[in-house]
Length: 61
Image (cartoon, rainbow, N blue to C red; front, side, top):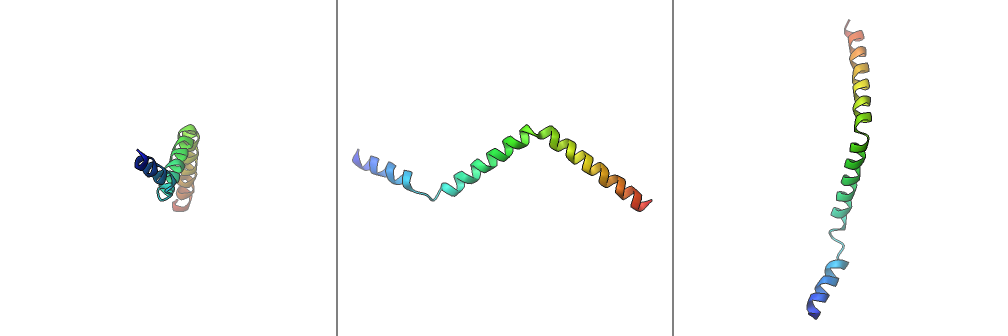
């Protein structure tokens, strides 16, 4: 039982996987923010693409 407790403590103190955990948490936060502002982001992109299309029509006309 004592060796199991030592193994658990050493696993808990090990910091190699810390970078992976941080990346996963950052990705999760970005996904949540994107889902919350999905409609606003889509509207913004559509407006920008519409402006780019209008400017391209002016140039090539």
